[in-house]
Image (tube, rainbow, N blue to C red; front, side, top):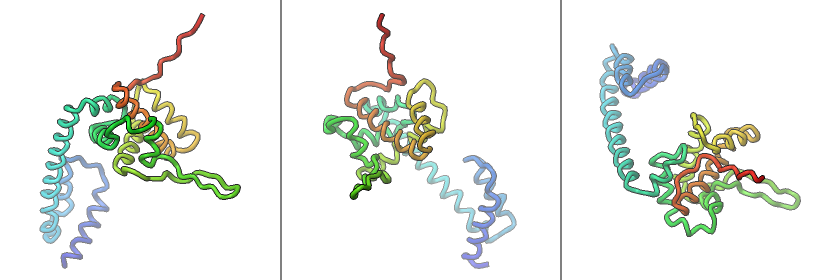
Length: 209
């Protein structure tokens, strides 16, 4: 069995039989179970869990460093009071926005980072296309992922999820995620500018007599 053929066999066996649920702890054992009795596959696959473990260890260390940085940053901690916004999104937003006052308004943040649709106008034609995707792609991705968390996971006591679900019913989940990412950009900028934590719900105006 050549190395190329062995690699194909490993890919076939892992792809066909590793479809069941595994965890970080059971993954290596599952691989050993699949390659048992195949000497060439064992020689090739034995190193893979070691490489994976090294990467997991390094990523865990990197995550700890990011959390430590976020704990020492007042702005990052403030942004993390928002549903769906974790350490990475908060730090990325703070770094990308830098000085909140450089934006004329919070609504300018979305277009600045490519979260608004392109406009196509020609004669009688006037329609919106896909988002422009200009600016910092890492921030755009982070806001999109934060929006996805809000839409797909339990979020209690916040107007954001209800608003996004209403958009999803009208325009579909993908457009709802983009719209929510754009809204998050506005909300987070306001929080940085005003130095306030996230407000889950708008305060209803007092009823007059």
